[in-house]
Length: 345
Image (cartoon, helix red, strand yellow):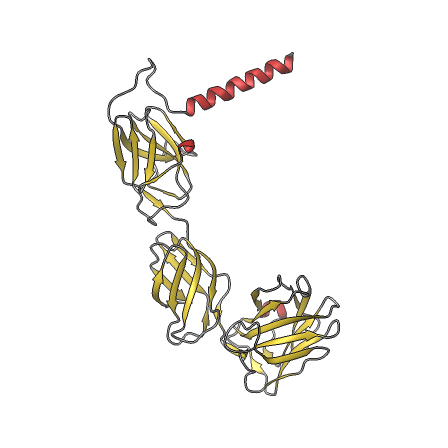
C-alpha cells in the first residue's frame, strides 16, 4: 500500500507539471482578449537573462503579455511543432525548428486567438559543416565542390590563407575555384555563424604519384604486384595504382634515386586508398626510408570507397629527408587494393 501511495503521488505531480506547461486561459476560465506583445527572449538555463540570439534547434522562452491563447509560433514563417509549444499569459516555451531559411535573421511571429506579435531576433544556423570536397587535388582554376551543411550566407572560402572565388552556393554545397598559385592547403568556410576548417587538406605540395611516377621515382615493390597505369577505380585523372599483395606482409614500395627529397617545409605524407571486396578491415603499415622502428598503421576502409589519409611526419619519426615510401601489408593476408594521389603536404 505504501508503494502504491508513493506512485499515485508521483503521477499527480507529473500531471500537474505538464498541465502547467500547456496553453492556458485566464484563471476564471475566460480568455484575455488583448492582442499579444513580445518584449524579450531567454533560454531555459538562465530565464532571467535576456538573450540576443539563439541557434537552430534551441529551446527558448518568449516573454510578453497576452500569450495564453497562442496556437502558432513561427520563425521566418517556419512554424514550430505544436507539440513543442507551451504557453501561459506571460511566456511561451518553444523549440526553434532545426532548419530555417535565413542564416541569421529569423523574426519570431506569435499568433494567438486575438492577434499577432512579431519580434526581430537573431537565430543563427550552426557553424558550417564540411563533410568532404571533390576533387581532392587539382591545379589553379580547378572547380572544387565542397559538400556539407549550414553554408547559407557564406562570406568566404579560403585555401589556407588565400581567398577562392565562389562560383555558386546552397545550404549544403559550395562550388569554388582553386586560387592561382595554390597547390595544397586546408579549406576554411566562413558564414555569419563562424569558420570551419576541413578535416583533410586539399592538394599536394609535392607529387610522388598522380597518373605517373614523378621524375626520379621508381617502383621497388616486393611480394606484391603493382600496376601503375591501372585505368579502373581511378580517383582523379586517368590512372591509379592497382596493387595485389601476393604474399602476406608484402610491400608496395616507391623509391627515389639519389639525392633524397628534403622534407624541409613539408609536414605529412598523403595518399588515397580504394578498398576491394576482400580488403576491408585489413591493416597496412606505413614506413619511410625503410625504417621499421617508427611506423604508422591504418585499417583499410569498406570496399568501394576512396579514403584520404594524411600521416604527419611527427608520427613517422620526424625524418629530414625521404628516399622511399612503403605501404606494407600488415595482416598476413593476400588481397587487392588501389592507391592514388601519393605525395607530400
